[in-house]
Image (cartoon, rainbow, N blue to C red; front, top):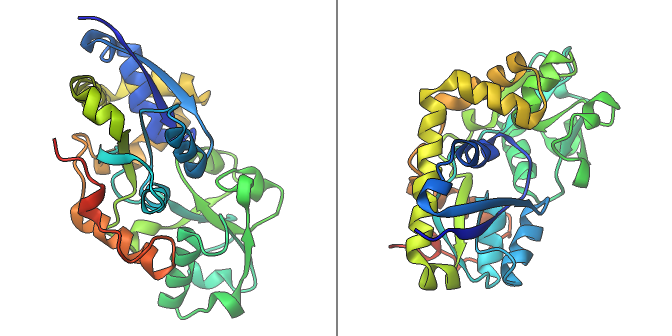
Length: 291
């Protein structure tokens, strides 16, 4: 079998990248004729722009930036779910904060006004009898979003964070988990795998082999957790105990077979229509590749 070089585009160095690194390390991609290179674009919009330019044929990102780009003509389709099918975002705060009600008068970080987590925050506050406009100060973080420095510097008292940075922040005494966003949005498709339309049309066999290797890596992580922890700790340059906590916190909820949660996807699209992120004509089924 001839080796096919694949440049897999990703927007962030978060825990959902582990199957790519682990699968490459174990040779799962190589044994199926895939020479895998992982390239970072540091943001969904930046990754979508690389797809538009033809730089990237396959990758993964959040459904929110993908669907927004798709509604604007992105020549790509969803080919499956990443391991983070459901929301893995944790709402965290300074150790002294006990619950959502204790946020009154505090500074809370979001990506930007009008973003999905801005919506999440407003709903979470409303369900706890609070008003984002009156009870807190919202801080748009931009490039600082998802970074522990936002908490250690005192820029914000609370905000959204994902693994492995939740476990790292806890180990440093910087933050504690207040709640999980999925407690408020239990069905919400988050991470998706995608491929460019030309790649789908011209290289279907290569695409299917890449997905097979990805799924094999996901399942190997589940079966051999100690090995995955040891390797992941090296990749993310964390102590084994910290990475173990980060991985095991959500591993039972991972999607190992790349299956899309259609109800969750429709919920995501509905919310994006409500906040004006996508046009009302966009439908979930139109985004998905059906081999």
